[in-house]
Amino acid sequence: MARNMKKYEDDLSARLKDQEYAVEYLNAVLEDAGDDQQERFLVALKDVAKAHGVTSVAHDSNVAREALYRVLSDKGNPELATLLSVLSALGLKLRIDSGKAS
Image 1 (cartoon, rainbow, N blue to C red):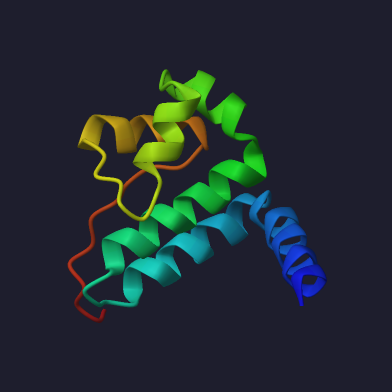
Image 2 (tube, one colour; image 1 turned 90 degrees about the horizontal axis):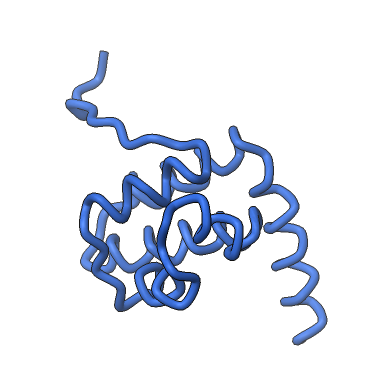
């Protein structure tokens, strides 16, 4: 079973290197509301950061690598500036939508 999990993680990491896939992955987490939405989003963002190399993302976002792991844990609570910096380092940006169907 551990071998299958490793294969899944490797496959997910490879897919998350694709910018469009990463966007869809993060948006899917945000669209799935629930009490643990923030925790799931931070873990998903950590998956994307891992795919792109946490050390590189930490450097590009001016956040210490250890702090980045802490911020992107399921118990993390990043400040908006930190979140925006990490997203920018990944080539992503935050966007607000009304949520109303067009």
